[in-house]
Image (cartoon, rainbow, N blue to C red; front, side, top):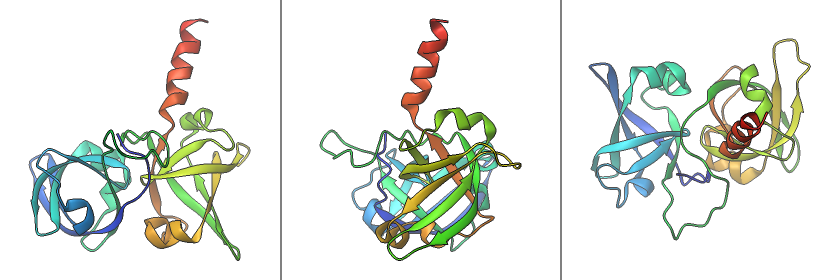
Length: 202
């Protein structure tokens, strides 16, 4: 489990094709420190398992299905990625409950800068729209964010808007991603549990 509070902006240093998978090498000295084989690290919101860890570079195997269903498929050598280690019993829950299980991908539609923050509008698959509410939580590329606005009326499908403070812009990939770029989305798992319970009593 994760909290969506990014610890480090890492860099993809290698991509090695394997049978039905690829092995990502990621330079991330902060999150790699103390990471053991088998530990979980979220990479752009995708929970991956540490395979090796040497001198600030860890590797993780990613199945082809995961590459096809997440924005990890677009990573290249040199790509920057958001990194977060799994929480421990002593960790502060600074964001919200994040599983690292991507529900779908969205696309950055627009960016509107202002003096103290930046509004970023993102598209999402229609089937995920029901899980979003204004002031609720969503994970974008592993970042725990608050939904500032929703638009269900767009011709091209639903969108949501988040407001990014300078700290988020400086420390995560959302500081430089542009309209047209893909992002991983994970909706609040609590909304899924509520949906199931309501359906069970219909």
